[in-house]
Length: 397
Ligand SMILES: *Cc1c(COP(=O)(O)O)cnc(C)c1O
Image (tube, rainbow, N blue to C red; front, side, top):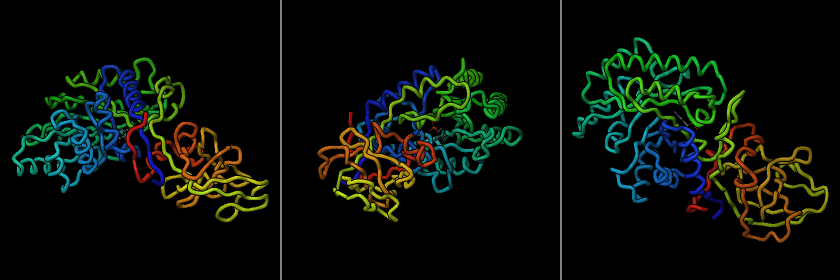
């Protein structure tokens, strides 16, 4: 096995509990899109459901199918399974599968609901539950508050094939304390929820925000506001968390309380094994373009991972510029030379007894996704989502 990801069931469960504790009465949807941010949706979804998740979130219908199947395999029967929210891009050809799998799609267009109602009719099923997204300022997906929304709500009220189960929005700057953009988005969402109430529609869920929304609390913060807004239409409030489940969260910009972020524990350990060893003399070059020249005799270890596996090329190291590192026997082994497509070389001169086949931690305790992100000029999200390990082992402690 070239490289693999181990998922800590304990840490995933503890992160989920930390978030539900911080969210109080507000429910916490567990986002498992993008293959659970690279952690393996089939591994993580059953753990999150056992931890108490009432809702899981995916991007597309095929992911919803994967999650339903994984839960079934884990011994969680369909009627005990949580709601599965499909958060992006419902197309006509998806409608039947959504209905058959009992997924709940996020919609914002009348056509999308027509496809769903038609599919349910064909399959002889009852009304399809949907969540309508409000575009409060992302300009990505969702309907804008105002006449358009009022027309849509009036149509929904007259359509027996559709049941409006929830209304949601997404914040653009939830990690920014006291963000004016969030304030504006809140006002637009209030207007939209007001329109739902005025249309006489009954809702179960009103939801907004992400991991940073839970982390970024000042006093009652966004969650207190959300709870009251949901209560105004007799619904429950919910927040949708992804990255924090897996142990990471953006730092809050400005004066926020970041208590959640401090207590999160990274869930992924990405491991590989030593496939070669080499001693080089002073003056020998290492890897592509010889950007690294040994300044003294060195012992190197060869790892069978590279940028094709999601190990970022920005972690390469020249003599002038240090790069990333792996953890070998609990110690840092600096990367030397260029990270290549499927191979990376690390310096184990200071680590005694490194042998062929030894396990190495590419990402995990001692070398976090935030370390990789800093070096690669990106965020931890992109690092964990980018890990493509061929095998996902069972669940480590
Ligand atoms: C991905 C996603 C989330 C989760 O965001 P995190 O920052 O990972 O917590 C929440 N809501 C929507 C609509 C999303 O697409």
